Length: 126
Image 1 (tube, helix red, strand yellow):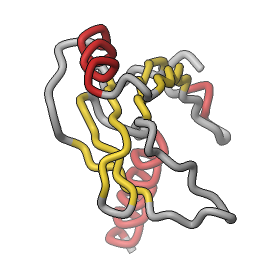
Image 2 (cartoon, one colour):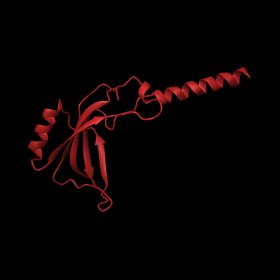
Image 3 (tube, helix red, strand yellow):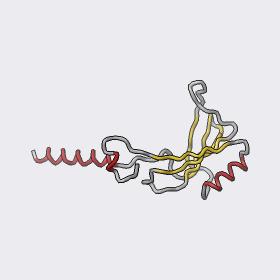
Image 4 (cartoon, one colour):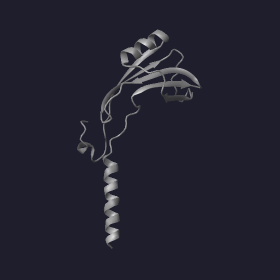
């Protein structure tokens, strides 16, 4: 009987720890490459940040050959992290504009919010 109680308590502790784990951001800090059908069509730069940060920016630079995927355009799009290193977003923007003057920059301001019954008790500002 005591083993069942201990097992039940351990199970409950594991569940609580899993629920309290902070969510991960979409893309880790650093550079990423966007490819479509094996051809490089863009780049992403996410500045390094605290892993617990819930507000952060991402910088996407789409080359002129980028094609928006969708139901009417089922092109295979892939994001691979790694690639040229940038020290900051200013360097990223300058290099992308120089190498791909016909491309365009998309600045994404992200604000992650945790949903669910324990959303307000996780220690993060939502």
